[in-house]
Amino acid sequence: MPIHPFAPIYDGDSRILILGTFPSVKSREVQFYYGHPRNRFWKTLAALLGTPVPMTVDEKCAFLHTHHIALWDTCAACDIEGSADAAIRHAIPNDIRPILAQSSVRAIFCGGQTAGRLYEKHIFPLTGIPAQVLPSTSPANAACHDDDLCRAWSAILPYLTDSD
Image: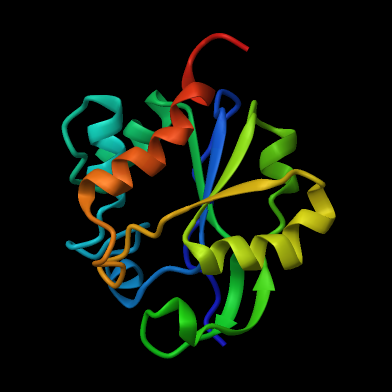
């Protein structure tokens, strides 16, 4: 059973937490979140926040910290063949409570239906905080166009402003 290979990215100023499911084969290969070149996660967030798309791991970490975004996944470990969320079996959830306790997270978002289902089943009972499910940025979700992703993912923006 593969174990999640990356630590969560967050700090005390993180205002939202975005949860995926489990790193893809390509993400595990490049040792960072959303590493597949056709995954639209970084492109979508950069478009929403009016910045260049971060390219390196250091740029991506700085981007997340600058914009007060915490990032992790719902699964600490799972059985999975390939990268498809539909292939996830026997999920062991991550405990996000330390992130919530050590940050200023105001809202939780799940990238994709599977992340949302895993959150609802395993993590929501521990936190009592509902999560908003956003469309997956995966290349497998080709039916969702870039404009549609930006429109849906714009739900994160109110939580990233300085007002409470």
